[in-house]
Length: 197
Image (cartoon, rainbow, N blue to C red; front, side, top):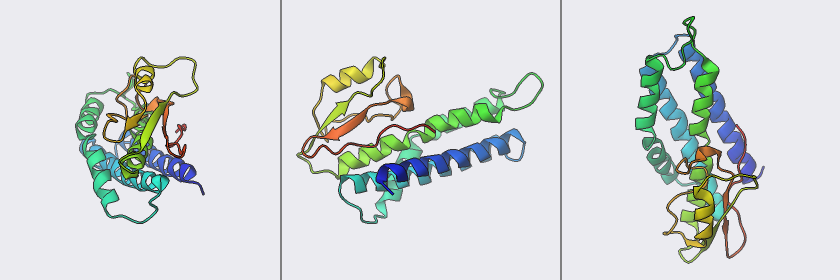
């Protein structure tokens, strides 16, 4: 199985776990605090796996316990957003007039968080590459881009310590739906391609 396929499979597995958690919240089996804790754990595991796959893409397929540390750092960056999400759920963000909770609405939003695994893989790919490597930000094959991605692409190439964001990391207006990717200049190896969840 290719590294791309492995990342897609991991992201889909995490999205399925998120959907089940959304169902549990909608059915009243978990409250917002447990929802936040469990969603954090889903993201932690996914980011750790994505970091390892990004390292492998860069040429280091070894097992590394630091993948979990990188995964935790990525999940920790989401804690304030997860807490706000949980608070919005408590406030009725996904609750209809009839009192029912829309699990699919919750799961859709959760998939945006899971989609950031691709950016984590791209960051690991860059960070594991040699210091002298250069990377091009390549625009995705879509008719309309957000305002930021073309500007970032025009700044290419980047040394690894010059990259300030990664395709799909949620920092551009296209959020984790970004269709761009990075290409390592020395050998043409590309970071993970976008995929649907």
